[in-house]
Image (cartoon, rainbow, N blue to C red):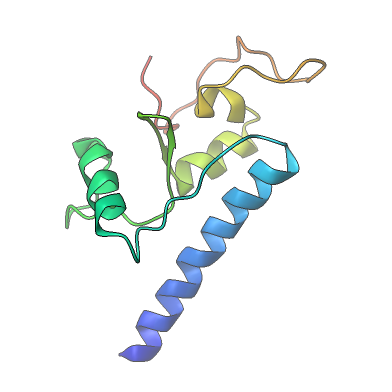
Length: 115
């Protein structure tokens, strides 16, 4: 049982590192919040993930991505937006000057964004 917990933590950490690595590589300002060691952060995340985006057990797993108070999505939504080249729309940001990404890029399915 402890091996399963360990593997689950590694899986979550790998996803977190992928999000952070992307944000850092693209010089997108962000702030990480520790939900493992801070009950207030954990409660805030759980309360601010929309109900339709929560798993059946009601407890969303990290990483959950927000732009200030606006919910953007979970890791799967982040990954899809990155693959579809709509990551800036997903994050609620304007694409950087000179970017090949248009700010008018239509939102794809399952991005976690509401129009």
